[in-house]
Image (cartoon, rainbow, N blue to C red; front, top):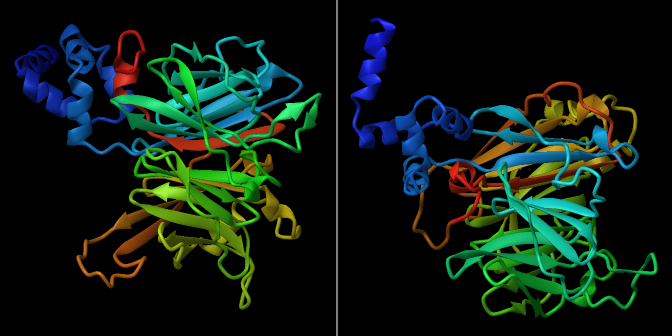
Length: 399
């Protein structure tokens, strides 16, 4: 078949069939397809395409990694891993449009990047596509808080919890552990009940992990303390603080994976070497059950040597929607990572079903970061869906 015949064949396809075919492509391939011809551009930029593509093909959240050099800004690097395409994408090195701006905080959730250039101002932008917007000032200054995104009234809202507050360069020991919710439509912050006092000793995202379950409950978990509490974003109330500490756990992270909570952490095993384990968690009772243990060879691949017992302190974990990423935040082997994919093999209506029933886990290595990777003073990572509608929108606006 000649090139002319192939071109004519594609041109003869109906709008609906072209839309269906393009909807199965990975996100970056859809963007490239939009540059092929005017017809395809019109298809993928149609306001209804993103919703139809989401219904046709489930797209898994991306894994983002941002490396920050505190001395030389040009050495900052940012990467995004698309699990559907199985490839890394190099992103602009600065999370904020001003490359010279000092960034106190950088994170992401719910399809957005978040950055701060001062302790009272948040900036946000749709992942992979601007423009950046600066919010009105927070009620309380924050540094390195937990951030989550939920929908209310058809618009995204941002919850900011904890984060150290500094007064005169020192941590404020009387800090109220503020929680605030940002309304993107009105550009206003709502002050909510603060974090429970149990989280005062470690109130930044360095010591806490957050998990938004079902867009309704925002769980806050102490990585080392193992204290956990949930904030109901609808009622604006906190549950009581509980302890979630499986036997032998040294440190752990709480993640939202689909309709369940998953705890991922490093354990001392009484019968073998230190291991990295996943547990399913009942969000109501905080009961837990082991799902899987990372294969020892995968865990060993995250380090250069087996000699240093303190090496495991550099392990970090993020995850969302059935994907759990474990990575080394030190420069060993250029920040290697592996991923566990948790899938449900069947459904059951039995009220006596266990937490782990019908779950399967598959571990694998994540491909190396692309190109030359610099040495960073700080590595920040998160998982988030990438909103197709914002990537394809002509103005980058989230509708």
